[in-house]
Image 1 (spheres, rainbow, N blue to C red):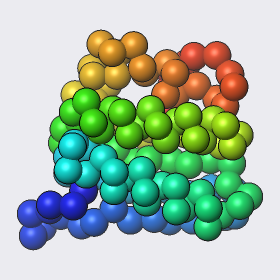
Image 2 (image 1 turned 180 degrees about the vertical axis):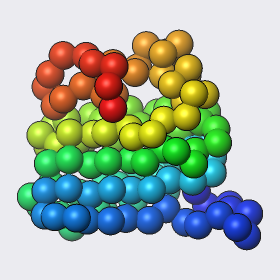
Image 3 (image 1 turned 90 degrees about the vertical axis):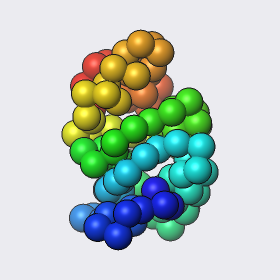
Length: 120
């Protein structure tokens, strides 16, 4: 999310209402971009005190490595503690495989303080 080819856009944020934010991701979620995602998401949480749903649109995520997964897990811990539902929307098959193989799909998509689910 930092090193984009010229045709890719930086992560964008949309806030349709005071309880919802959408972050649109593109490119690779890896060791070079994981901190940026986490920083962007945490800044959005701080800027929107009434936030209840944080949607990460992952449709344009081409790859995710262990650092990207660690960033998603760290973000989930923060959103869960704040009572914010983290949504991993439009996950590409490769991301779903990674989350399934690592056993993190359910925890990353569960409601705050809730049980595991496989929906985003």
